[in-house]
Image 1: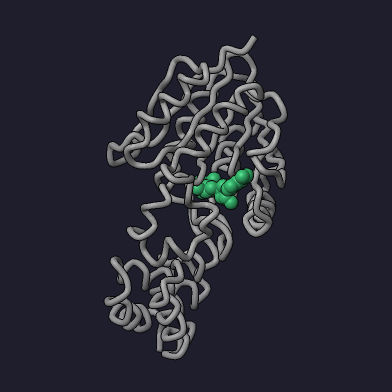
Image 2: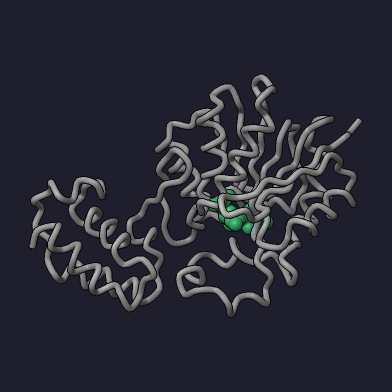
Length: 275
Ligand SMILES: C[S@@+](CC[C@H](N)C(=O)[O-])C[C@H]1O[C@@H](n2cnc3c(N)ncnc32)[C@H](O)[C@@H]1O
């Protein structure tokens, strides 16, 4: 069948398994036709029902669409994704935007991205600020491999990956440390979708109350900021006030917040007054 016919059939087959069958069908058929979603109408690649059934089966099993495509889009770039790495979320663009504002007046800023995963935050900051030097820290080899691949894919020569546990000794001196840590409280597991649970649990859960990494990182990584340097976190829904308190308890001042596109407090940051 033609890609256009395949798109209609795929959307119908996805109805029981997807909240957005039409939009997903577009991405899936573009993937099968090896074209961009906007080019489906122009493609004459033959697509079989068996190819569609194979993908719909994966969606039925809760495999994230982005893992099936093998790539996803974040901020201004494309990122390779698959099993073992968190899919970049649109919410996280708020942290990239906050970071860019926070380093706007600093020439050749030194930035560190802790818990880097696919590298979407580090690579996006580095892409907009070619004069920045960015270190991207990730502990788990499967995610780290995507980080390395995405640095190459995006020609981000100003990003250096580091396979390292952020709970170990901190290192370096930075103007800005950004971090989107695992922050889902353990008890919330039963509320998560099959798709989310197919992403690495080491990327999702931040201890009993979700705040474990905020506490550890605020306490330990403060010494890796220059005086006046800033630590900026992405936070989960309803975590902003608690994370602001954690920053204050650890001596950070000028606590600030940034909302995401739907008005949720998504970023919390504070300044280190190290001497
Ligand atoms: C919520 S994900 C964020 C990934 C990416 N920064 C993003 O925003 O899409 C958290 C990441 O932290 C990594 N991680 C978990 N524990 C870690 C640790 N102790 N040290 C370094 N990275 C860790 C996970 O593997 C995962 O990639």
